[in-house]
Length: 420
Ligand code: HEM
Image 1 (cartoon, rainbow, N blue to C red):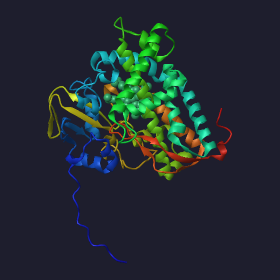
Image 2: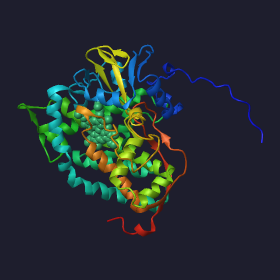
Image 3: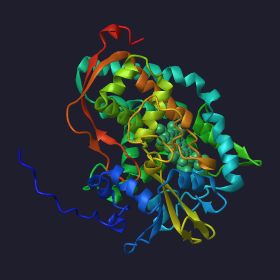
Image 4: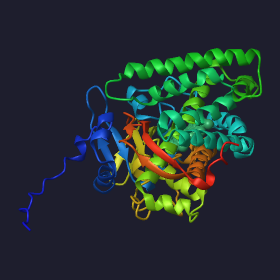
């Protein structure tokens, strides 16, 4: 046996050379290794400006991410809460959409929206989500080989949020397409212009639907927003439309991406699939690990209102800060052996849903979807085989997939029992 000559160790590129505004960076780089470097070498990192884009802060440890999420006195969401809008200098939905509103108005609108999204209120839809998921998985099993994204996952959360908002069934497929294009691109060939067009289509769509619900309210979330009052005054048309936009995006995209990522994780970790199948771990615990492992919302952001010292740096008033969930959820100081997919992980205080005052309004619904998918796979599927590489979204915001060729084999014990 010959021994290869010792390799000259090449220093990795400096962290400053990674452009986190460019989706391509997340295609070309091993995220685990990159985020480990940020956390250890430069946990409060100044991302350089690239003309015409200003510089910004990259926050990567769990402790700092949680602390900044919590701190809505010194950091605001009102000038945007994702990197793209923050770097443009503002969000046109500011103070008209819950996620980019702070202070008492945020509290009032959040309380209003929670009336439609609290666990107690949503309890009746849980059985429907499980039934729809079981049916789609059963149909997938009949086909054998399929695209798990377009044949299964694309049809579940959109129909839940679509039912809650009473969106006509015929329009839902189009909304899924717009949702995906708004938050991310399929490939580097798609332009940012398409993102803007898709966003405008959604806004236009809901302005027409909201106007109709103001005239003829029903028992749905759009009507609830259109007829609600805060301090005796109705919400403005723009508030209704922007919040519908946020609900259709939030309600569909992230839950979908987590479920797809969950399937991939089980296919790649057969020992965890076995644990799930054997009932060694309950579905609720596995759901939390799938949420942590997939972390569909890679980052959120804020703007500093005052100077804030953090570790050995000072974040200046007006600076943009980005909080990287996709790093915090893999921080060795918060999770034992974080790069192990361990469906029995407890405790598992991940930040996939954010933290603090803007903690995800739809976390219950998001969990229901991931839970339903894991449960359906566990009871109906014996084997999962990936038939090709998953097609990734092109994004620095949503971690997810546009295509996933798989073959699913039925669990004989479950055959014939699933389409109730
Ligand atoms: C907020 C993630 C599902 C609606 C957030 C935030 C995160 C997040 C990280 C915090 C944003 C910030 O701090 O700026 C997720 C994930 C989901 C999911 C990973 C599924 C796995 C949903 C669903 C809905 C929804 C199902 C709708 C029903 C919202 C809304 C906010 C929000 C309206 C803003 C809350 C506020 O500002 O008070 N989500 N989400 N999300 N999410 Fe979700």
